[in-house]
Length: 508
Image 1 (spheres, rainbow, N blue to C red):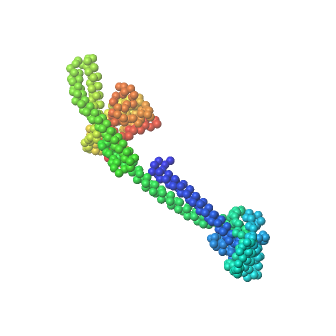
Image 2 (image 1 turned 135 degrees about the horizontal axis):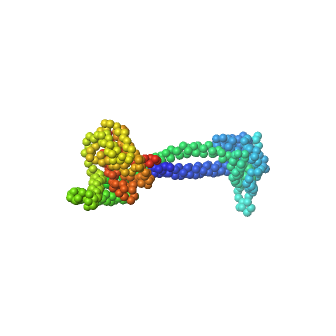
Image 3 (image 1 turned 60 degrees about the horizontal axis):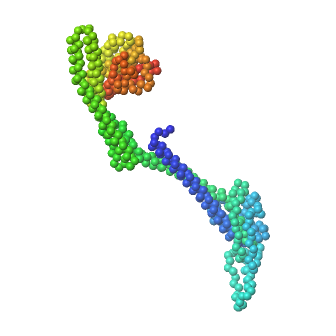
């Protein structure tokens, strides 16, 4: 399936145009062929009527047949036939290629008209004669006409080979199928002769094939031009959408103030741009309010919690050791410290959201920091098998106060979300322009629905948020923000064997 709207629009326009052009071409081809066939019908009728009023000898009819084919534009002489009969039905002339299946007696001849009153029947053609015919006899006087000086008869001026004046010819068109050839036959009858002029409709096929070939050559070129035009037009039409896409990709916590100009755009796209800008404005306002609230709340809580922690510590030292009061105050101090930790992490996240998380980069010995963490983990989790595969001499530019928090959070999660007598493996690997710190551990498994929420703030795998597993659900969120502030990142994966892997990528 094609997922590009621009490509689909181009192909759809080319397809519709191709269908329209094909239908237009087929209709035009049929109309042209019909017009050619109608012209053939007119020509054969005209020629049959004309020749039915003439008398010629055999040689003259042969020349006439050749001239008729030339006038009609017929290249193959066999595509045009001529049959001449006298008034008694005797064949005067017949084309050599006249098919036997076209029987003259079976043709739908029009009835011969009756001869005009007073007209003498025409003489039979004499091949030995010179071709001149005697002038017609003068008509008798009409009854009741005034008698006067009778004018002297004038000889008729006729073209050589013309018949004496008689009744006008009666004609019709007929269509006959002889073998595989379709003949259109013009039939004309007079009182002294019958003439049939037949033309095969296949005589128009060469011209029609030429027209068809020209259309088939032009159609792909037209479709290519239509496709290019559709591609260019759709590109210009979708330009506002590309602007929206580019702007949406650039939107971050620091780029919510971006807006798109709708000047010069079409009305529909201008309305879409206005709606998009309004959405950005609402998002920017809401995000600023939430960010300001988090930063203000964390800042306002920091000082009271520090004071409260100090006072509780003094009270603990003031009461008797091992007393119930001291135990109660110690529990309260743990909660205050927990609130202080949440406040500090919220402050750090608010700075990251605002793009104000400043990194004081300096030389940081990553190999030594990881080796120390391996030793600490072995002491903190004696029930787990902790192994390390750390390459020596890994030194990067990093914030010495923030990056250890990331490493500590990753290992702390590996300890908390493990199984009895499980294992933790800490390793490093060099990649092009990056160093990978991999923390893998056995786990009881993470449901598939919860894996996408691992880095959500305040998300904990413990749905009851009980105290069995310590934490507030901000460690991984903070760790990823610190890693990204170092131009790195943290990725997460779970193997089918429920092996959890956190990969910390840092630039060399």
